[in-house]
Image (cartoon, rainbow, N blue to C red):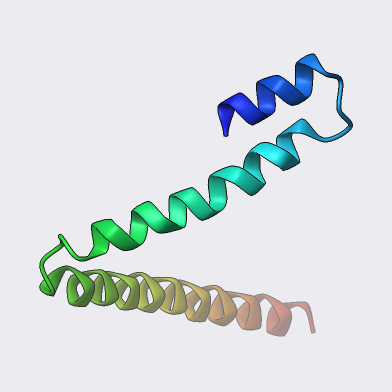
Length: 77
């Protein structure tokens, strides 16, 4: 991918970064697929749990902000 970007820049092609990314994305997906088999199966459950905790924390913060907004709007009336 780096070679494709450098060759495109040297030859003054219009989009060498696009060519490099088109080379890098399939390569990265292939390597990622190979690496997923090496991870323990509980990692995926842990990542899902962390995502749910983060989602719940932002949900609670938004509810608290909405409650504050309601109080401010009522005071304005």
